[in-house]
Image 1 (cartoon, rainbow, N blue to C red):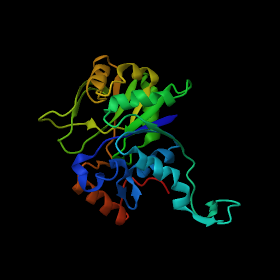
Image 2 (image 1 turned 180 degrees about the horizontal axis):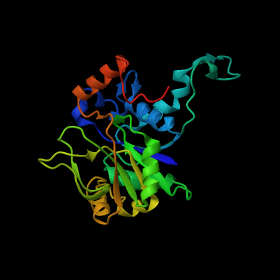
Image 3 (image 1 turned 90 degrees about the vertical axis):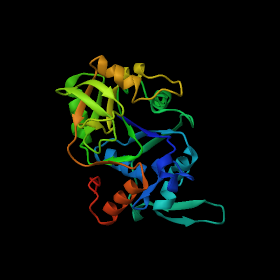
Image 4 (image 1 turned 30 degrees about the vertical axis):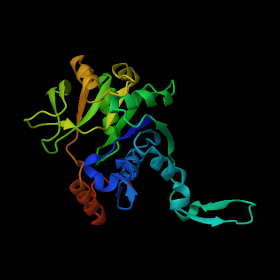
Length: 262
């Protein structure tokens, strides 16, 4: 099953770092937050990624094109007989397959998924999706099992962070309404970590102004096709410098809850 990750945002509230790179490439513990997200999915056996690129997407392409050389010892042969040798026994090699899909610099989240869907195979009846700026210790395997148990088109992960985010209205586990950012209210909010059936793509539009979090999820909820997997563990987005500072501190202290891999 493939994992689509939204990597195209500008990260204007983290301008200290995003003037020269997209937000998913801001480093926590010396590695882009995008890498941390991918490690979480790979820990659960999901290692086939479609990265939906936008703002400064070339930075992400360059990182992965040079990834092997930058994370292993190498031997260069300057005679030209062989450009270089990567010593993979000197460090871990990720068994990832990555499609780097340019989805437009000014494209919104729903349109990015719709445009990148061309890289799904006919056999990809179910796919995962998430944002490129949030880490969690969510049990992706349990999330997938829950999605497969209810037979609906879409599942999102509900979390309980600060009230500045939008809130979900629920009837048991079924989402009855989706509100992006209400002024008041407490409860579960959209933490990303979605599982979608391919039919959900019909709710999306390739027009650049299509926001996943607005009409598509709202209509899906109204149709009774959106379910929530409640996650009571750790979840954090990286919207501001203070968010980054907290994540960096947790990583350096060896207490990062999202580090579920070895």
